[in-house]
Image 1 (cartoon, one colour):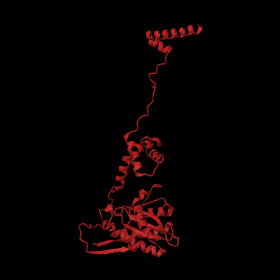
Image 2 (spheres, one colour):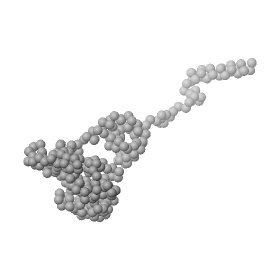
Image 3 (spheres, helix red, strand yellow):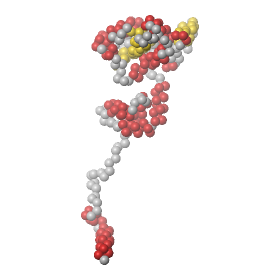
Image 4 (cartoon, one colour):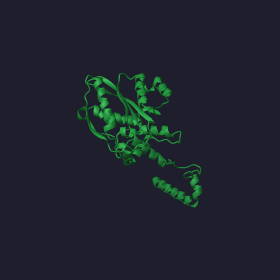
Length: 304
């Protein structure tokens, strides 16, 4: 009996609360219901969407560096725009953009790869770098290469007895004497190129030194592409000594400058662009068949 009366009492109190809430909704809600939200305080917070240019920049960075991860791209973006535009991103946002725009990144990557660089004045920039070749006796020979950016012509390709700055400068002086002085020389951050002797020598010669960013070889892309072509052939060629390698490099330099047409030079050779001749207008005087390295280097040399 007591339990029955208790349930009746609870039911009566519930209906009384509903009745008073219907008669006095504002007063009842303040006393018994939820507190009203303050007008100057939002109940929900929504993140502001990133501007469209942020997504475009992330897509561009990923297309330029397809091997880079989300954390690296986010760090690079923040270093570039945190102080300039007060804009930062996190690796989660970068990952979301990359996954959502994977097709756009792929298309942009192809456009960047096949894009043609803007034409440059002659002797504006030279690119210099060092690579190596191991002979049959397991001896590593350092190779110095110099490329002129406008024509892609090889101005120097030789072995080095060492990587001292004075040795590099000697070959650079010879190239300047033969082909003129560039306005700028672009190199990586190898200690040979960052020594005080090398930098002071360039300053005295009136040549501006352009150092690329660390771990960014594409910023010196022309000489890197030149070395890519060289290594593709050189890896198939056995070298016994330094003298043999020097002779082979001389043959390769002639083939690269005078025989091999370049895709980004409209089918002309680097030597033709350097000399300002157009093979499609002027008739060649003589034609020679060139072949070296047991057929690895071959083609037709058109003498104008």
